[in-house]
Length: 116
Image 1 (tube, rainbow, N blue to C red):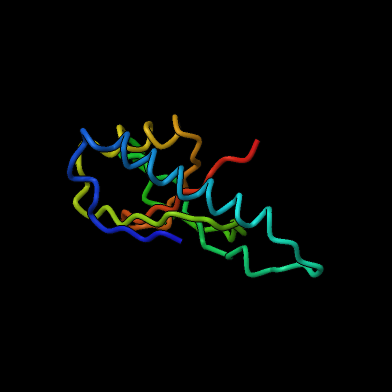
Image 2 (cartoon, rainbow, N blue to C red; image 1 turned 30 degrees about the vertical axis):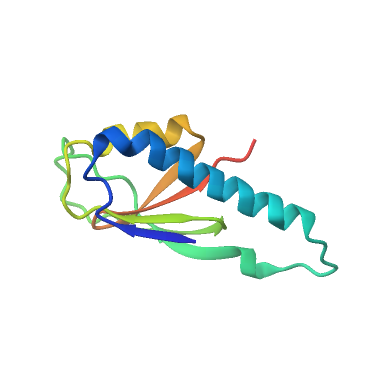
């Protein structure tokens, strides 16, 4: 698990950040796949409350109801409280490198590798 806070200040480094996290995740997945176990290990997942994406053009004042999702490690948690204008660029960069994203509410996001 990787946890980061306010690391999105340098947009020119988003690609390098995505490459580094991807390499760490792929190494972790490779290590797990080469480790043999005889029992089912449930510690490789976590249950999280995922909030629907909030769009600023939405005029609905209805509260966003979270749903529970089980996500598999490795995961990358980002607290991006500064609400930078480059957030969409970071999201697009991560998606281009094979990551999915969920909102945990209040500018907190979790990323995982998309499995193919």
